[in-house]
Length: 312
Image (tube, rainbow, N blue to C red; front, top):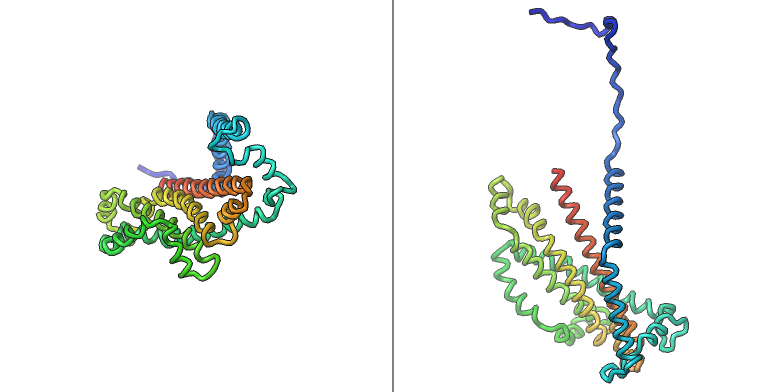
């Protein structure tokens, strides 16, 4: 059986189409497409949230809270709320260009106190993140290390933050040191404990399967233990951020000279009651915003990790 070889320069048979030359295909990067897809997903989720009942329920909750405040203080003058500032008084003071008690959104002192408290929390939270997460990972992964450190950790953890105030003042002979240290302690204990629980929650079959596939302990720690504990870590970071704000206020009331906690304490001693409520609402809003930011970073990181695993 003979094979026919075709000369590429030979003329083609009449009626048969000539083979067209192959054009070079221009390769486009997939990054703009992925970015556009993420933007569409974000817009879709935002639209769903706006059209859902959640915004209305949230607004209804705030409306009921302020309505109860208005009735209890300004309308019925309930004796338990006799000395509390009214809703109208707080709003007028907060939005006044010339506030009666010196603190409003138009005064630089208001933003100075807010920034100092925020800076202290960020420093303490960063220290708790940098020390608590590695310590929790090692305590959960290395049993002998946990046997040495966990009993000491459990003895120190239940001690109230206010009990640490005298030692903090003795250890740090400055204005910033004791406040940051007290804020760090509470966030550190929460971060470490949640990280430890995250490591202990990992299915041991996954670790054994990784060893059976030839992974080293270092590879198992990097690719199984740390990703497996990540959801617990970010939940712990959200809790740690809230606890850090609690401890910050206590530290600023006792050992601080500036900040929102100091503002609350000084406003109480000088009977500036609307200023107390202004500082409290500012603490709540900034604390909620910081926790929401951690939640957003955690969700994005989890999605990125899932995409990396799905694409190999």
